[in-house]
Image 1 (spheres, rainbow, N blue to C red):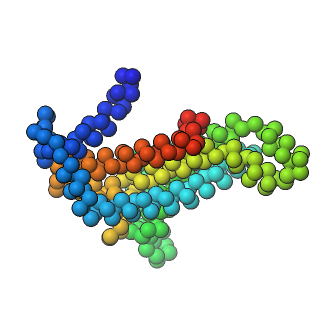
Image 2 (spheres, rainbow, N blue to C red):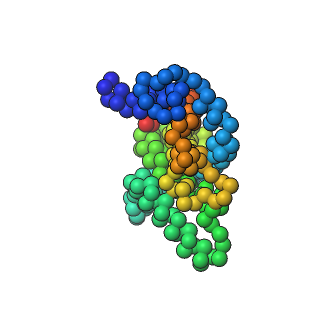
Image 3 (cartoon, rainbow, N blue to C red):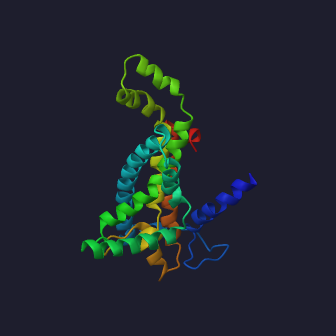
Length: 254
């Protein structure tokens, strides 16, 4: 209980701060209000950032999970020389600090632009590609772990009953991997939606993600509006996780 309290204390503090009446933080507050939520709603940069982050996260999660499932299948099912090195390479973004990854991708894009004479930095495609690189490791990790725990005799029985490899995979193996795939999609969405370090140097004019909009607001304002925006994010992601866990038990793969 103490460990959970320490972990959740910052979240509770942010939620409580969003209701403080005073624009300058001090405790105890002089009163409570919902005006900061209204202020966040009326700030167009937050609305545009939320919509743009949602679009990027959905596209990145969809493509990243699709590629990650195929990569995990190839690594686990097909034993070949160098499989362990490829697995380590695909998981390496989990070990790299976000700011290092962001700078590395930015410099790589600049070199590629000079070579191809084509703009990449500041485009939606370049940002999505960078976020896909962040989502693939989660899928490879979760799906690979789930595939190692599958009972191979079930798929073998399907083949003995006349199903070919393709049918056995889509009708037997893939449904058994559903909890891992859904969990991978959930974590991929969260990682992409909340990312700041990689997005910071790759966004273009008029395309600002919500974390960047929050950072820009903090440059000139210190009122609890940011706490209100953060509370909405916490509630949104919490609801998504609860709904997901309702249909697919995340504890099976996490």
